[in-house]
View 1 (cartoon, rainbow, N blue to C red):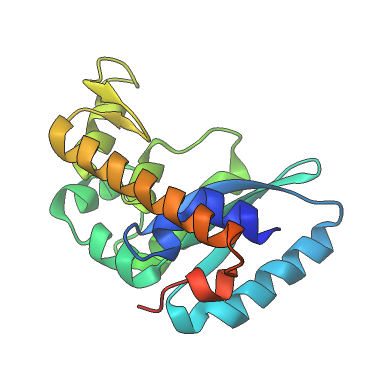
View 2 (cartoon, rainbow, N blue to C red; view 1 turned 180 degrees about the horizontal axis):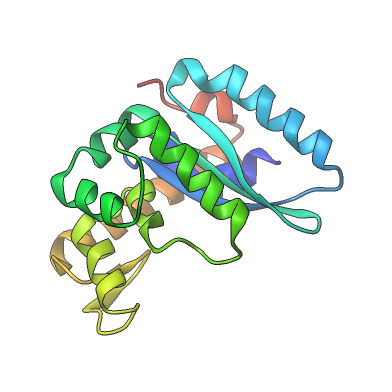
Length: 183
């Protein structure tokens, strides 16, 4: 798992402006990737980051980098709670919800539609995606927008500026250790 992959795919989460990102990661050895994930977590837990494998495929894994405190705040939204409850998630808190998400990814090839709640997407857009079966959206960017288009566009632009800036810093020699903001 290269620093470049993590930065390119997860810059807004590293910067603390988004609660989570998903990214694919190629691997030769599952055991080696699992050790890299453990090492990442040992190094970055003090900065408020957590990396989890959601799914392992043939030489490719789907990883979830998130900020537990940011996610906890996102999931306290009443619409987010309602959507998670309808989807059968536990009500005991953020950790239980993440555990349920991991289980869903490992038991099915499909993406759970509520994944957007774990990625910092506006709950009204996640609700619209679910209710409209991914159709009838107002705008598409990093996600399909069903709610406030202007707010979503500002977020898309903010996340893209962050990614561009982090990639530039990485090219100039900064390492992941310097780019991962402590929150």
